[in-house]
Image (cartoon, rainbow over all chains, first blue to last red):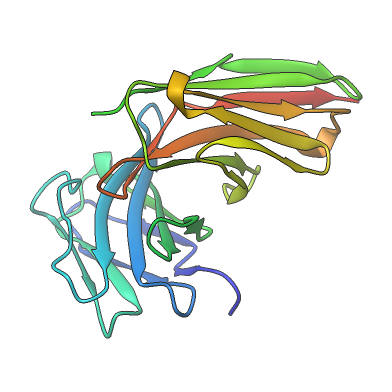
Length: 112
Length: 108
């Protein structure tokens, strides 16, 4: 496709369950980013992948959060043992390094 | 970390009016982007503007990197311009730091 795609669009889960969020970046973009948008917290960086380098995980809020990027393309963000404070919109972006970051539509996560 | 401040936080416009949104940042950055978040939450790229001035239709932006600010101009506003406008600066480690946004409401 022409843009960044994310799935699912919406996810409702119960506290304590694990969730997986998927991101398909724009073809040819070597950089992939995950951000989170929470009410009252704004947009915050979570994790950054660049090519085959080790990811920059400095923004992950806890060890319940992890992400991987397979084959330098698709990425999955996993949240284990979800908590209510994890409720947010999770946004993925991709880019050519030092160029415009293009964002996907986001996954709206609600933890009950 | 880099601080990004946007002003005003809220802006109400009558259709046809012009406006200016401001973004101040606290340190040197690789570049700066302006986004419009539509009512469905999608972040739409408006400008990639590390310095200088760019125009796209009724929108234009100016970044003065040496003075650490950027301005977004909306001319002849339309109701479809409503939404939240975010400024984001790219740090030396390539991550974006976002401002809190300006919520624009354009009334018919």
